[in-house]
Length: 202
Image (cartoon, rainbow, N blue to C red):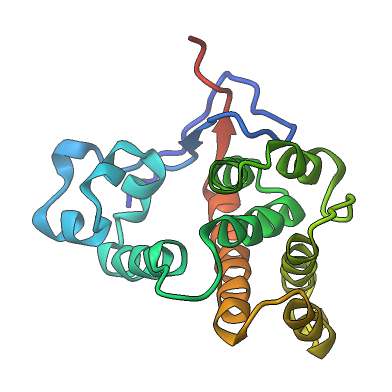
């Protein structure tokens, strides 16, 4: 890997938002023209080559491939289990707790898209994970995600009971846990490798 450390002259966003942010790495990502067939296989989705984050992770294509397939299965495999909006809410809640402004922007935007509940999602961003949420499933998913994020040992039978009492079955509960657990790891990786950039001006 290159020893080059990249510096920037922009002011990174410091507030949670549903706007579409950019992201820049502190280490040099691979250039698109450097990508080999092994790198493309690791990316899984060729469109991810447009992201400096994924081109940086492509320096270890085997791990990136495992990461991306896990990510895709958690969020896109809807053969039963949690509705997509709640999967995104789980990730957004973990990202809000961890302070990952970029990931929170992505997954809060998807939560809004799939739920059509912009105000509820924005309240999560603006007021935090303890903000009022009237939907018991939203409340249960947020609380479970926060417990897993702050200290995994804080997640307990009480969280499972709350999820179940909100009407979620075992597969849905598993999806909520996987979304939060994955983003506990993903947030920490992203926060250690770069920073968000302001939305592009139209």
